[in-house]
Length: 146
Image 1: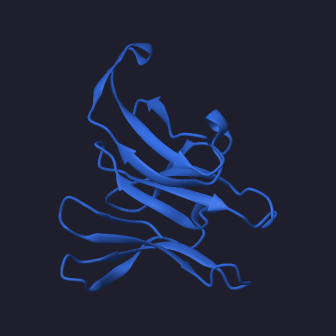
Image 2 (image 1 turned 90 degrees about the horizontal axis):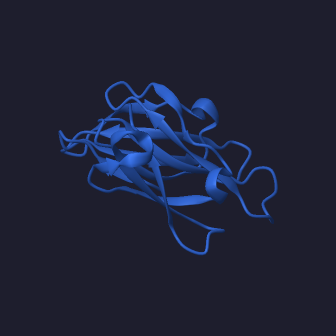
């Protein structure tokens, strides 16, 4: 599952306790830079969160989580989304990339590039690179992180 460090050196780990069982819990755990457990940063199954594959902090300081939902049909391709959480409190902000947007299915990895001018958005923004199962190649979504 996904892992990310914040600017202070704390470690955040995507947790899928009981993966593919009836007692499944999906959350994000926070550990100090020394490895001590601090607490649950994103609560269990928060706003539909399942199987957190990739975690990354954006330039805005918020935590972005690529997650998948395979509960509907385990034999078919999973769906999934990218959700955004407050980087300080862990509170849900929004679904940053909805399931199916741009053909998104089963997102596996997130990465941000340096901020660049995005003419279509009328100013500066960021590029979010998402790799996913079901796409022949990674695609880039240009979004302003406001």
